[in-house]
Every structure is written in structure tokens, then in C-alpha cells.
Image (cartoon, rainbow, N blue to C red; front, top):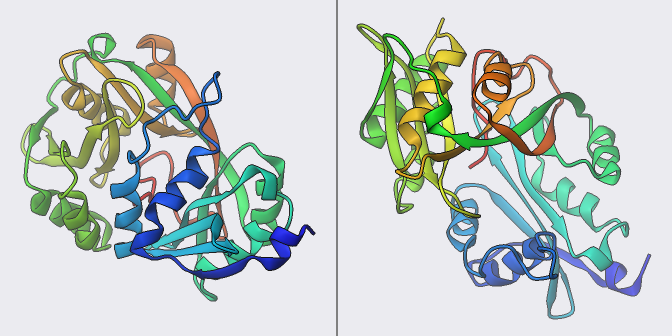
Length: 289
């Protein structure tokens, strides 16, 4: 273990840590020229949300933050939203100390694990099992087929939150209220012939052009493909570029890739201590704050 790792102190994150926390993240998000692919400040609102809503801890060595972890209670489980350590401090045990500080005892755990084998080893050791891949897709709305009898319309965040509570029994209204403060969020409901069949929110992408389907909660018995296609069509801007995370077993994955020309931009693995926590075929709920 290096002197840096030995000297690192784990403490709760604070508002004045946001810039340093983002720099740890951006150290893992470099483009071909070695520069971050997004401008500094792009994630500040997100990290402030985590500080308000979840549990954030940092690893501090001297006067520098060398790593951070963050979790959020989604109602189903405590979800590890972020875990990053500066590249030259990886493998020194800081990541484990951060994770242990944001996962309470006695609660189900979930996370999205990167392809880094060290991360997978850590999460398995903490009781989680890799269950399926998540695929981060990008495409254009013009390639999406029409959805007969299903159309998405804009609504208030309060209406979307109320529908999620009615369908799942989980109250995420505190999250919805905070999300509503993010500029450019669009709340919508997908309606069938006579009732709402899904509710969700989209946002502007942090990287590149277009928009992102951040969240979609189908109602009971809803065909997930119909819900996702209608939501993607509604969420897209004039340029038509739209993306979403689709879980591997979800039936919408194949038509989006094969018939609609979407491509896989990235992937990770959903992990959980309980395989019954989430049905990837009938719900699109990443648990991300």
C-alpha cells in the first residue's frame, strides 16, 4: 500500500468538495488527447443532488481528494451510484473503504459495475451477484416505428411521481422534486387508448448532442417495447438523436438494435444481493439519482 493510500481519510462529502469530486471523475473520462470529454462543471448539479439526497463520502490524502463514493436508497435497495479513485491510487484499498462507508448493513445492495475486473471482484466480495448486462444505446428517433394506440405527452413531475408510487408502491417524490430543478428535464406520460401505461423523464445529454431517456416506469402489464419506443420518440429533440440504457433481458433491446439502427455506445453489468429486486424485462428503472 502506498503512503498516499495509508494516509487517506474517509469522511462525509461536503458542498465545497464538489469541484474536487468532479475532477476525480473526469480523470476517468479523458478523450484521445488526454483532455476530459466534458467541460469542468458539467457534473456539479448531479453531485449536489447526491449530497442532498444520498450518502457521499470522500477519500482525502493531505489536502487532496483522491476518491469518492456515493449511494442512494431507491426504495428497493441501496444503490451504489458512483465509485471513483484517482488512477494512480487504484488497487490500494481505497475503493473498498469508500464502498463500505456508503453501504449500510442489513439493506439489499445494487450497483452497475464497469468491465474493470477489480470492480467486479470488489462487488462480489460485498455480496452482490452479476445478473445481466446494461447496454447504453444511441440512435435517431426517425428510425423508430409508430406505436399504434400509444403516445407520450408532457406532464408535471408531480403527476409522474404519483404514477410511479401507484404502480410500484415506492415513493420517489423527493428525487422527482430535485430532478425538477435541473434545466431541460421533460416529464411525460405514455398513454394508451384510455389510460397511462408509462411515466418518465428525459434530459439533455452531458456529452454530445441530443437527449437521454433518464427514467421510464411502465405500468402493470405494459408491453415494455411499446413504452420505450413511444418514450424515445417523444424525448428526442429536433436533431432526433436520442439514447437510453436498456437492460439486456428487456425485449426492446433486439428491435432497437436490429430494426431501428441503434448502436451500443457503452455497457456495464447490473449487480445485486437479491436477484428478485428488479425485473429487467418489464421495467426500465436504473435506480440512478
